[in-house]
Amino acid sequence: MKLLYSIQKYDIFMFTWLLDVRLHATFARISRYVSKTGDGPLYLLSAAWLYWHSGVNSLLLQAIALGFLIERPVYFILKNSLRRNRPEAALKNFQSIITPSDKFSFPSGHTCAAFMMATLIGYFYPVLMIPLYVWAAAVGFSRVVLGVHFPSDILMGAILGIVTAFFSLGQVLS
Image 1: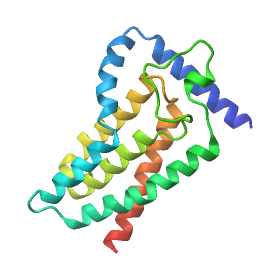
Image 2 (image 1 turned 120 degrees about the vertical axis):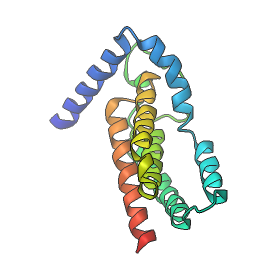
Image 3 (image 1 turned 30 degrees about the vertical axis):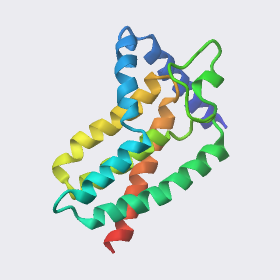
Image 4 (image 1 turned 60 degrees about the vertical axis):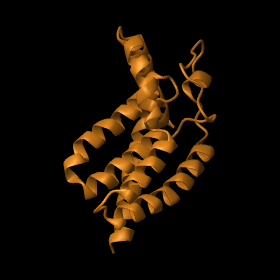
């Protein structure tokens, strides 16, 4: 219990520090757009583009499909089992910038999906790995700036996304 309390204390400290920095208003404007790039429709469009793009490895599309077939249920079970309140519900006198799509925050689904896609696409197109991971990290950061996640929600989302991607790759490539 002490560990969970320490993590929660750290999360609240980092969260409130970020909201207090002078550039928060600028971050918030940019974060709205960055966060939207982590919404589900972009992944469908990406998969469709990859499908029609000449020379695309069908293993990538298989890995993406398997990744989402695994990641979404695991994410849903974790989120609804752990039931961690979002910052707006956990902190007095705090209001998030956007309205989240669900009640609980742990782990971050946007971050999870972004890191999974970054890992999968980066595996097949190594030249894109760094820009994709920068984008995935920006998606996670944007969710904190918008006030819908704590930093540890983002960390666990990233880990879950990367682990799911490697598992999917292992299944597809074997």
